[in-house]
View 1 (cartoon, rainbow, N blue to C red):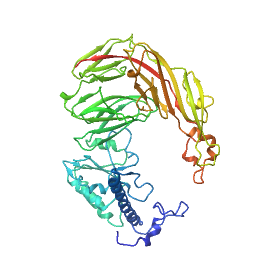
View 2: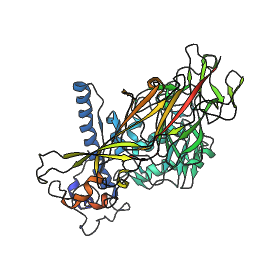
View 3: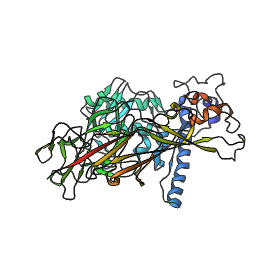
View 4: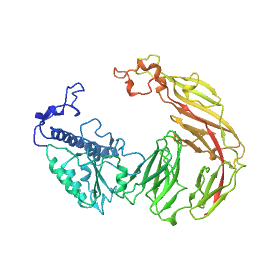
Length: 534
């Protein structure tokens, strides 16, 4: 591939190149060349990258031909290859965070010279791939490993008007045994272009903003939120993943660079529901949000973006409202809980609406006095029999209030499935209600009067149960499966896989029990429906 025998330089590959020399190898080996032999290492890795790409291309072709599916895999993990160059060979790469920064709001992706070979990779009006991901800026960091083809394309794009930001200086490494001087010289030539910016190394978000490129999402929240934006092209739908990294409930708002109709997508059920409270200002949509600890949600922008086609929505409303929905006649339904004061709501038709206090609506109440049947999972009678299944035993507990399993006498060092039951009285079937389980560890399945609820987000398990309520006694059944780690703790020293025990360093809680089951209060909140007409 590169025109020489790598055998002469094999000792250069002794470390970090997947050859299995081990950590006891005495030292790295270098040459007396200016690059200390790094070019030969890069050639070896380029060859491995090319071979791995060929391997994945065949797998992807087989998957498409015989299964009708895109191929997904962890591309290049722990291998001496350019992961970014291999990624285009598969349909769905399984890779980790790009680590661009906290709450920056920019959509970003790593790309490699292989991406530059794709038909979409052209520059028009200062945008790379305008018929695809629409990259508005290319960032080159001083730590990058250059390629001759990649530099040629980067120079071409810069000359065609694509903004380029060089962070920390021109890179000093190239993925070949020659060509570094020419590559650096070509990069220096474009630094005089008005669309090429040299900035110090460090946080990139402020540098990008300083050259006039605004983020796709602008976050205003009392804790750290992360967003990730996915969009095929400018005129197509956009999907934004939002995550609260805080350890408590967090409120805030996000301004999105999109004015199509906003929807919430429920990743647990696949359900798509309209966002009913937001504002639109020129080319941005702002949505107020409240996120539970570690909760993630998906906001999608779909359909038309013209104002006349929009259904009635709320532009300003109080946080006390439990939610909104839409009637068959397109009127807005407001779900209002017990209130001692009036509420004011502003709608998109310019009208202000006052909702009278709902002091006749039943107040929220906590479900107490639960019955828990704990199905405890333990090892088989013969611990060394790999073919045997786990032992299971049921024990019933009466719980005045809900506690994590390790805090319940008799459930220490226990894993399994918890079957929780409770009931409450309901007198007014004209009133609806939400049930809120809060955070659940680790899965939840709920039925109300025998009706199974849709799958719940275990970081914030909240559902409208109005359709299942009946006058009189109402039964709540919740099934929770717990993590296995608590039940494994008593047998930690006896666990073996392929003749080896667990590596304690990889399990930070190997000596501590973790939370399990229903760990907080379960609250039922009644509400009345108030109609706001178009």
